[in-house]
Image 1 (spheres, helix red, strand yellow):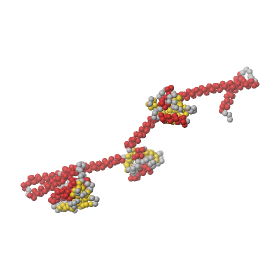
Image 2 (cartoon, one colour):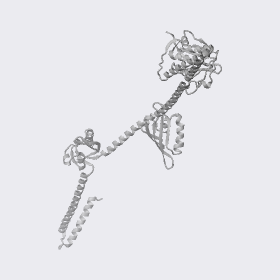
Image 3 (tube, one colour):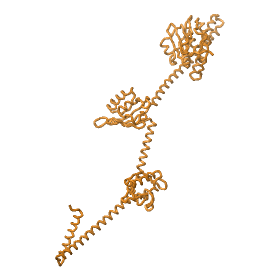
Image 4 (cartoon, helix red, strand yellow):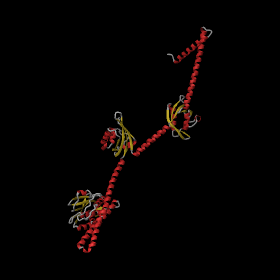
Length: 555
């Protein structure tokens, strides 16, 4: 086959021959023979040369136009173009490149490009230049260009060695705005992560078709999971507290999928890293396809364990507040009613005695004096209880246990109760070893015994019996009991004996007044010692109150 150049030459020769033939027809004389052919060949060659010259002129003109266009594109391109030597010296550059370096082009030629690279990114630039000439292939890097040490722009450099091998062609693209937006995005992501940490809020995306979910780092923290955790439906289900799994399954299927409502639920989970039970509040939305099949679940999870604990604490405090209010009301009731009773009795009796003293018999005076004495004794015990109860509840009473003999301490503290028992012909028996000792706070112990024995006297009829006993128990314990043959207590009343908000006061068998505060004080004092006040009672038969204290040898 003929080559393309050969074909073009033949076409050119044919054109010259045709042109010459036209000219030959105009000539006056025709040459013949070999001379005519020679002249013809020379003339054809001349015309051929003329045509080639014309084509060369046109090609040169096109080349000049192309060169001018290339120069324009090179010089006025928005991208910076540089020709650098192996050392990094600027051999050539365009206008955009000069603008990037903040200098005129004439000032930059034969200057080192590295002079305009920031100190922080200069190592990367040096590796970039070395890589171009050592690997003889395209190289890339990001650097910051500076002027007098002040950062100007961030650029992305692409370089490749030229055909000569001693220079490289480098393009520089301004990526300052891109980096600014990326930094803003990173800051936004960082702020979002910080907000999630502050709010204890994590986010997730659940691909239902692929059975795979992704989560924020905060959600991983809330769930207590590591990167290797199985992030599938079964993995998620395993995090939910066993007591909540069925409820959450039903809620998701019936409400979120069935009714297409927003997921909004508080439930419990088991944090995986420490197995702690935590409360979370989940919100989310399902995305369905055109066939109403769920595709993706997007949502957030917030740790509300602290809030739940606060709610529980508030409930407890509310209950305590209600109790304190009840105690306050009871306290005021005692002051307003029960103190008035003894004072009223004393006032009334003394008034009668003053007005009728001369007409009263010895028996009547004795009876009135006994009534006054009983009222004063009740008043004294009541005031003592009020004071001790107030000091205890305000944290003023100090607990100071000491070792002492039990029997003499009991006798000492129930002297007034013993007098009241004698007036009602009630016998008090003791079943306590004289050598038995206990470790207790003497003042609190005295308050316990005064109230228990006074109550026994108050609710035991004339001629009854009270037995005070103490028994050693295993574990260095002493059980102390006060048993009476009184009127007893109903089961319903026993349940309310230690409640300040319940009215358990009633009159004794001889009309003695009662507030109900004494037993509450006994209970508090006994609990200070680590014990418990127990009650056994039967209506019409009697009651037994008993508690335990630590035994101790007297020294």
